[in-house]
Length: 318
Ligand SMILES: Nc1nc2c(c(=O)[nH]1)N[C@H]1C(S)=C(S)[C@@H](COP(=O)(O)O)O[C@H]1N2
Ligand SMILES: [Mo]
Image (tube, rainbow, N blue to C red; front, side):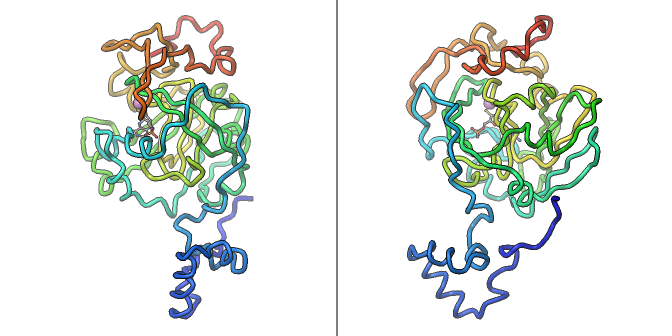
């Protein structure tokens, strides 16, 4: 089904069109006539799009997920990021533009009927995209509310056909210290890794994100594919995924390896369980600085509380 085949946009238009025609068509599109061009010359016009999946946006909104506060301004969310591959400050957006997100492949391996390597642009077109308004709560106490676009992680699990022995999913980010200077810092164990249980992965809330604010993901948000697990602290929502492995063993995630007494595997949001160095009782919205009381499971308990019944012995909230 997911066979790699050349598409119109993979052929640079300059290779197929005399330069003078190409240049004038480009200036036409820059002049705002892009829709006309796209309607009459689908393959060729798409070759000029900055992102080969741009035509998939905006996706219809799934109205099941509503916010209790305004959406964070795009300019704020796009300029305050955690993406340690590009540095430990929040101002990593410029550095993250160095990441080349095409071609991009995602390996599905481990305990599956058949291991495979998917081209991202093929993968996304086998999935039905939707928009969801989710909040994200960083373990550092800042929070945001954003319109993610993507598809349920459960749909990818179904496509991957895991064996019955699979108990966890392990996600891995790209590794390229040439481009991502943060990955030259050897006190971290790169690449970034995260993991969830099969039950968490197939919960309706678990979302694989390909876009935000009605467009393909900008690099700093973790292009071209990142996770959104809104009931967990933000570090579980791994960016720029290149590998998804089905495992029998619980994966050790990046921050857990770094500081197991501060960052655990479960990392479910809970106002009553402080981080060893600060309280988790409140959160601050990016942009407005408005404060809200933190909610158990970040307010998403209706979907996920049942996952953790009879698991009191586990450190579910760190
Ligand atoms: N690969 C990778 N994924 C990552 C991180 C990172 O440093 N590297 N930071 C995490 C943390 S701590 C948070 S809070 C969110 C931030 O997502 P945002 O920058 O889109 O707000 O990404 C998470 N995913
Ligand atoms: Mo975070």
